[in-house]
Length: 326
Image (cartoon, rainbow, N blue to C red; front, side):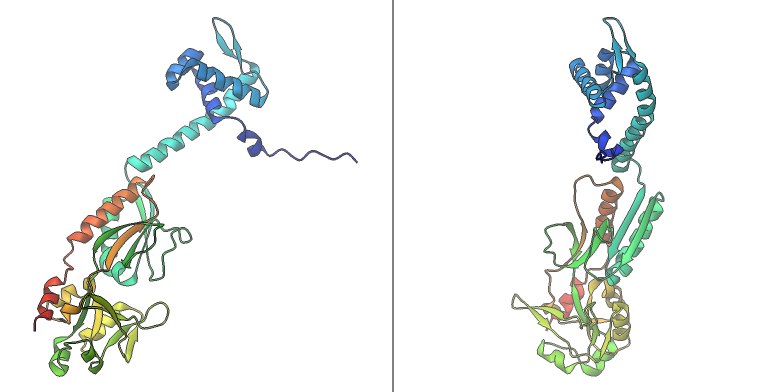
């Protein structure tokens, strides 16, 4: 029994045909001349001729009738031209669309991820403002404290907290991340304020439950060295907003990020403690995978967020300095 040849895959067969050759062919057919086609494309006549000859060899047909005076399409060339012209036009339009996405008016989709706390307090209002300014940009904000997975979750840009050690991503520091031990005035009136790390064990505390199910440790700087404190807590929540509610209600101390407590400190509803032990080496970052070939919507979104976050009044340095006074 005679073996049958494998079926020819049309996409595989077309792969060998040079796109440059197809473009050269379309240009010659449109201009009716190799010379004018070369001028149109900004290349030499010989380059156009070689591209067309290579294409003819690849597809096995003669596309042009050439004389010293004229260049005209063969019957096969006319058929090839009618079939190729719409496709080349669509490719050209697709390339122009990509240029427009990179340099033109903002449009398209952006999927953004941020942690629950920073995302709710800081990022969500600014994402909404950016969307109002650029209504043709489709925005999705995902609040999630799990580690970022850019490819798996199709994330375009993420806002990260803490310290970064991932060399695979591009990150810009927005602002320092200040951790503030605080309590309500009523609690401090009843129990007094802690003055050392050792004195924390005598106080009630409210903990945030991390995604791994454990209470988040508190961070301090003591004599230039980072120290970690695990608060003995009878109250824990996986939502930082609920932790704040309990602290405002006088249930105990908590170490909370500045963006969450700055307004309450300024209004006197909370008081900062242990200001001289506050760590200052963490930060809030905006991160994305690459600076190369960034769509215009992503580049402008990142620039907008960097500028606006840095203008927010969420710096607690003054309250921490007062808390550090003897």
